[in-house]
Structure formats: C-alpha cells, structure tokens
Length: 156
Image (tube, rainbow, N blue to C red; front, top):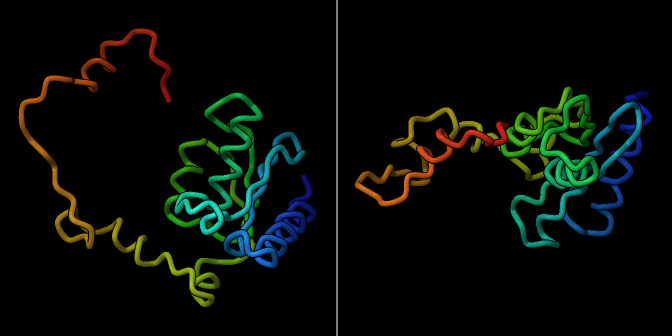
C-alpha cells in the first residue's frame, strides 16, 4: 500500500466534495490488501444526517462490501484527523490503522471545531452540557439479561 498515492485519491475526493457542495471538505477511503475497497465523503448537509461523516460513510460501504461488521486488516486513509464519533466507529470496526492529512486544529481554523466534544467526553455526566440522566425503576423487559443468557449470540 502506497499511503501517499492513496492519500492523493482521498484528497481529490475531499476537494470534489467541497467543490460540489455535497458536504464538508472531508473524504476517507478504506484499504485492504493494498487495494481501495470503499470510499466515503462528508454528506452531512446533503443527506441531512449528522452522522454522515466521510469515515462513517466509508466504514458502512466497506462493511457492506466485505459482508462483515468488522474491518480487521483494513486501513482508513482520511483527509482529516477523525472526530470523536468517527474515532469511536473506527475502533468499533477494528480497523488496523488511521492515516490522515489535516489535523483537528486545521479543521477548527475553517469552522469544524470538535474540541468541545472532546472536552465533553472527559467531563462527569452531571457536568456535561447535554443533560444525561439514568432512569431507575422496575421494567418488564430485561434485554441485558437475555443477551447474557443467549448461547449463540455474535460477540463484537
């Protein structure tokens, strides 16, 4: 895998996405065995979906192509350091590595500042800006208990 060549593909996708105003200036590709198997661009505004970041789009596409929910032995090459949401998805997908061009500080300079979210994650629940409240009480359904007792469950 030649990271520089793949980064050029990624940056071209990001440039075209920005030029065509389909979303923000972000793109990502996923590589397995030296070949691009999926790509994604930021489509937050065009799809009216706050989760439609380039990395998420690429992960969804790669999982569909490989017919698997894990992307072991795959690499993601992205135009910018992943935000907290995308970073979480990258870990859940079990990608082997992340290569990026712009930093989160570069993104903040053009109006994409994720530092607030990074800061919120490190706060205790009662100090976060969005109210988070655990609901206690007796409920009829016990999905966690059912999952624990299910013998043929698929771990992830």
